[in-house]
Length: 137
Image 1: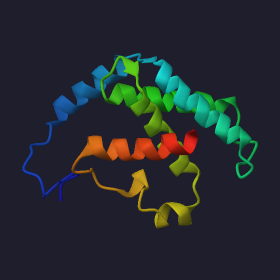
Image 2: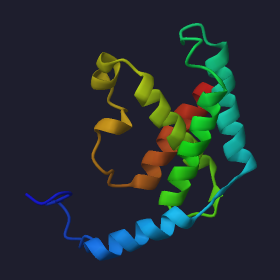
Image 3: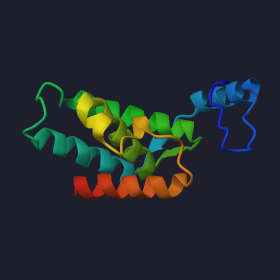
């Protein structure tokens, strides 16, 4: 079976050369943080600092810096010039998945690390964004 073989879809995969060119282009992008993305990441950082369940050693300014880098990376992958709220939400989801215990991640139906590509990625994003933003407010 070829990597990323999706037998449910008749869509063509990009040839390796096109994929390499896309990633090369994405690497050159330097997206700027929007106010909304900054607000999401700042609020996540503040909640982590206030939470009793988190290890104080983990919740440092480096967490905020890491979340910004992850959001910027997602924006680059999506080929955007600005880091949008969507990118910040995915950074939060990734950080949350990376810090959850193995049993929490394996038991969760919402883990972004253990799902296939959704049939409707925009709706999937909106659902996850609502979960993150409601939890963060």
